[in-house]
Amino acid sequence: MNNALELIGLRKAYPEFVLDDINLTLPAGSIMGLIGENGAGKSTTIKLILNLLRRDAGEITVLGKDSKKEEMAVKEQLGVVFDQACFPDSFRPRDVETVLKRLYRGWDSQEYSQYLDRFELPGNKTVKEYSRGMKTKLSIAAALSHHARLLILDEPTGGLDPVVRDELLDVLLEYIQDDRNSVLISSHLITDLEKIADYIAFLHRGKLIFCENKEELLDRYGMINCTQAQFEELDKAAVLGRRKNQFGVEALVDRRRMKQGGPIERASIEDIMLYIIKGEKQ
Amino acid sequence: MDIVLSNSGKKPLYEQITEQIKRMILSGRLSCGEPLPSIRLLAKELRISVITTKRAYEELERQGLIETSPGRGSFVKKTDFLKVKEEHLLSAGEWLGRAVKEAKSGGISLEKLETMLQKLYQEENR
Amino acid sequence: MKGLLIKDLINLKKLGKSYLMLFVFYSVFAVLSKNGSMLGAMVLLLCMMAPINSLSLDELSHWNEYALSLPVSRKTLVVSKYLLGILLGLAAMLLIGGGVALLGALGVMSGTGSTLLALVAISGVSIVYMALILPVIFRLGVEKGRLLMMMILMIPTVAIILLPKLKAEALIHWIAGGGWMIVLAAVILIFVLSLDLSISFVEKKEY
Image (cartoon, rainbow over the protein chains, first blue to last red):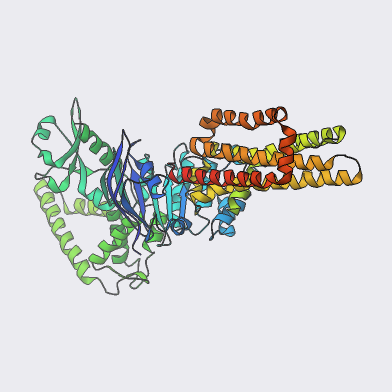
């Protein structure tokens, strides 16, 4: 099995928002960052993968299995972390285990307690008494303790301090040491993803702008700083978006389409996202 | 194996890795046939993506410095890298030639040039 | 299924403490007034409220979205709530029924026969009540369904109040004679229909 996740022609229409024609492939053993501004459709996409929402059209294949026809088998191998706490307030970590070990065939008690130790989650406190960061860590511990092959995280880092976010990245990098494991993580905090993501999928207003290999992305796009006059001379087909100020122009360009020379600097993924969105508006 | 990455954005990460490993191979710090860390382990330790370390290794393989076999990992190639070193020697020679020309037309002495060369060679990040 | 039930039980533990206090209070009251039916009614009602309370707690902690990301079918989610109500109700019935029978045997309480019959009747009403409420909650959620819930609560209450005014004697004779089978069938039917309806609501729900 080569791909951990395949979305083909996925579509979901609401009166005021349409998620349309989403085609996405996540190769096994990689981390894919799903980026986009708030309301772009990231959570909708994830919920469609989990069948929490009903799709209007499209195919979803998870770990080689159809997400509708083999839903239970798929979910056995899925670890999911949502952006909000999902365990009852009165639960303690051991209660989580008591319940989940009966719902997951592959529950691994040892792994779970190892994660609890590593995340320093107090066993005698309830979820209600946990901080936001601790709740997220508990969700992660649960998601990683049943031999899941695909980890899906929907905006897990919101409201977390940098230390916890850092720990989370470490955990993910460790998780994919086994090349059978894959990660889909959605976030609008791109700097977190930039370093460790292998693939980036960019959603904007319900459309998938691109889903690409990060290295290729960083090769292809670049930033230029120039004067207004110089900017006018550029081939507009190469420019994706620009920012004008009193003293000049900053623009995102597609290197392959740039005919003339001039220094093009590396763009960050965040730059790419921002300027493409800007470009849409211009 | 020491690899230090700079995030200042000038040089792509994969290039930095390629260059540093190449340096270690050509200087002998990494010996022939020595195994390299897996791309995943390297990614984890450096806290970057696997696709970046993979690219770095692919580049090293393209340059004939390492070989990768599936299931066994990556190893420094068992050659004496003469050809690679020759290329670098030739290139260095060219650049030195240009430096000599610059120095001569500016009236700069050989000693001064040598001193400068010494200093530059000692610099960490060159 | 077991996992979900256990989760609900753990969840309700906190409420369980106040339930326990009520139970003790009404037990004492029952023994003193030599009338077990009030206690029976109270406990059965609490048991039937259990699914509703647990659904409320689920909603608060966004448990349902999470649960559906697990290998748990939507049908199981629904059935577990009905099962919760039934199992707790059954446990309560046995506990109180056993207690009443014991007290009767010891001679502490009289009229245990009619008390036990009253218990059975009340449990029937509780099941019907649960059967009416749960589809509403599954469809609308606890918050939005609250008003409708209150209205539905009126039905059994009104029925219990009206009952003495109607030809209660004749009714009771009919039930004792053979009519109880029809009543039982009706209760089971309502229960099954309710379960079906709830499952169909949840199968279509968007989370």
